[in-house]
Image (cartoon, rainbow, N blue to C red):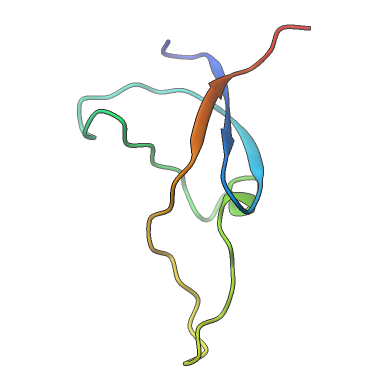
Amino acid sequence: SNGDTVVLTSDSGEAEATARITDRLQAGVVAVPEYDVKMRALFSWRAADDGWFSTAPGAVRLTGKRKS
């Protein structure tokens, strides 16, 4: 739900975020700010042969944060 804390997990890492639901993205699509230090864990940050870093979309799994 809007405002819930969620956990995003990719092959490269994991990060917590606050969900903000919008109709500006297609259903099933998650957007995160790459400039946010905690979100950077979701990206591979491997340089390509030409020295550039790929910022292409990647797959993440989204789950609700477990209550303690």
